[in-house]
Length: 247
Ligand code: FES
Image 1 (spheres, rainbow, N blue to C red):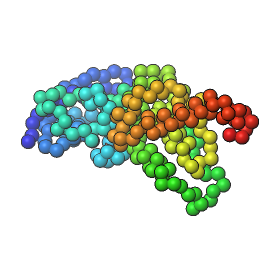
Image 2 (image 1 turned 30 degrees about the horizontal axis):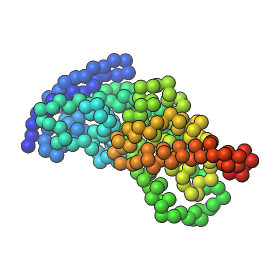
Image 3 (image 1 turned 90 degrees about the horizontal axis):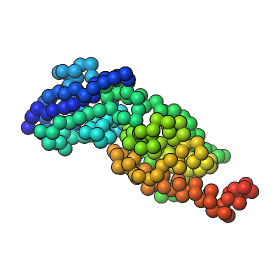
Image 4 (image 1 turned 60 degrees about the horizontal axis):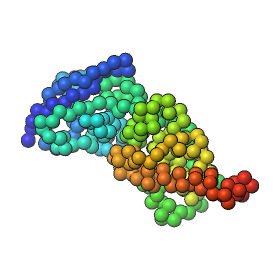
């Protein structure tokens, strides 16, 4: 069944912008990205939107739909009432380039700051892992880097000034993945706390709620990292051992 939907799309650039109303055809089975593409094809050829796979795997099409951080390509039109106005705006935490496209280079900068996997002296083929460790890494590696978790995190969403000291849930999860990897030789607890702002996170789980891959970012990465940091800092035996250089 086809119908005419009311769409309200944010149009503008880094200087100014406004919500613009459109009426656009919707067909059965379509997702919001289909409607944005139809808008480009019929009414707004200069509408900027970033996308690539249309399969929920490249993480490019992040936006806010009726105020909720979502992937445009994974949000079905059938989830809205046909009479409802669907409002599409760019993710708010990153600077707008144009229309629905934002500058997410903050995330790439944070990624570059994390020391890479350190296998120590182990050579190729020499690393052995328990299945439980494999599964933990696999969960974290489902991340498609859509940055919806970064977008929704209140530490930086309304506080530009925190971006310098805070890597955000995606990259604290990456540090956690490496810290909990049995073959990684680096100690990443101080890095997480001192360089990447783990202490800013107050485990509201907003990041987990918006993750399209359903990764339990808070429960499986951020809380375990906090426990490790606290253990090092406040356990008197661990503290003494660290001072003596034996822990
Ligand atoms: Fe790739 Fe939406 S276009 S995740």
